[in-house]
Image (cartoon, rainbow, N blue to C red):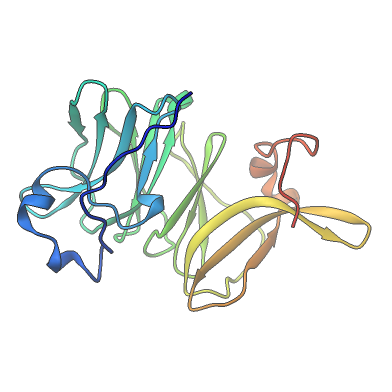
Length: 219
């Protein structure tokens, strides 16, 4: 399909630049704090992203670029939204915010389906793995089922080197003669990546990773 280009009026860091955004720019359009705070549909027509309403509260909205119509999702978050995870095949979209909430909405109807306090502090990154959303927070990552809204607990003990997870990826890391499946995390205040080995406690993630033949990422 052809590449569609979008003009962005202004991108701003949610925390550091919020006071500098002009009023007319916050009342219309989207204000995204980073690449994790917006998602584009498979066909390139629908954009799901964060915006500020007239009361200066962060909310999620989706815009249809073919019709110009915009659907505003119900206001739930009490702080800024930093990550958006779109799962069209499940008719679901998730927003994660500075209040630590993961909110799952009906993608088409716009209503709230689930509201989950993830317990990982401020949610700063998100990754979709099939029906599972991997969410990064303060020195931790959390997992939630996008269909049921249930938080998934794993038994593995881990500690992230970074203060806040800002980038998440699934891949493989070579160890001696074999390769191990990994969740790779990069973040704030750290020059190193964290590699979390996906062992049997992470079967709910391993099932979502493409087979070795189709996987392109080897670390």
